[in-house]
Each structure stands twice: as structure tokens, then as C-alpha cells.
Length: 149
Image (cartoon, rainbow, N blue to C red; front, side):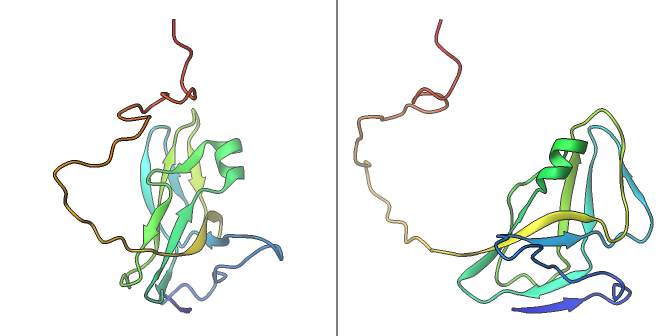
């Protein structure tokens, strides 16, 4: 997988796996100065890298569990998808759902990136789709929602 640093980001680590069995590579904030995300606010944080993802693969951008638990910082479009033909700077859409402002510092780990193989479906339009026992039931239909009164 090819990766390119943006000019001025030579001081930042490249994405890396932190343990031998980590599924995701950590991504680092490439902010020029400390950037505050107020409660309820959303900001696009650059990582300072570009990728050349091979055809048939995607990169998924996922939240870091520690940021979510301790600071209520998540990724608004989680998981974010980077398509194989995208060549722009990788950015992370951070959202603050907490009560306190959160400060993003240069070089801070802000997300993780997981690569996945992509299957492309061929859609076939039909007049009527095959029925199932579940039918239209959704949003708690299988017992995962709140109990019925």
C-alpha cells in the first residue's frame, strides 16, 4: 500500500499498528495548532497523509475507544469509507458529544484505519422481491428494542 506524507507533516508518525494483533492502524492529527472542538461541535481534522488503496479494497475510519469513553469524542460518519480511487488527504470528522470542550493536538492519535476487501453487487430490478417470515419488521422487531407495553 502506498502512502504519501503531505509537505510539512514529516514530524508526524505514519499510521501504525500498536500491537502484533491490532486490526486498525492509528491515525494522527496533522493540525497546525491546537484545535478546540466545543460540545456539540463537529470538525474535520486532517491526518497529513494520502493513500493509494488497491482496487477491490477500502479503508474504514473508526473511532478510538479511549477517546469515546473518556472524552466523548467520536466519528460522525463512523465508519468512514475511503474508496480505492480517492487520492486526497485523509481527514477524520470528529464530533464532541460530551459536556466539555476537547482540544486536538498535533500528533495525537485521533482514529484508527482498517482495510477491508470490497465486494461489488450487481443489482437486478424486479417487480416484487421474495417474501420472508420477518417481512417489513425492523428497528427492534427481533427483540433488540425497548419492551412493548
